[in-house]
Length: 156
Image 1 (cartoon, rainbow, N blue to C red):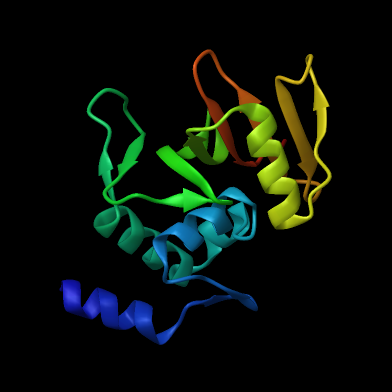
Image 2: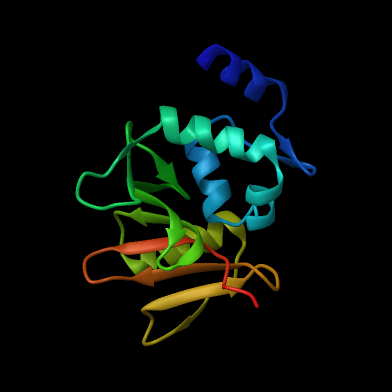
């Protein structure tokens, strides 16, 4: 069954014209930067299968926190070390990555890597940009960490 899954994934890694990376670190970056949208998650078997492979082969469940995952191997996103992953952004749908860097370092790395112009508020504790009407890229300073990712605000 696992061979069939991998073979199926090898045959098609495109999502509506977007290329899904086979490299786990690049895939994490694509999900965090909203390159793969919530609609892609819901409407594409290719995305579902790729994410299934990723969460099966590349991460371990975090024993201390439900719905969080730890990378099996050192992983970077935007050149920053990944500490933890979550297939949601707090209470909202999305994808969140906790990184081992401070907010200013994360903001600079993302702006240089993606060309995003991140606007900050709350005395620099939250920065972000709208990707579309239904997606936003956000970085936030927590109590002891910085998280970044793609958030899909609830819609009526």
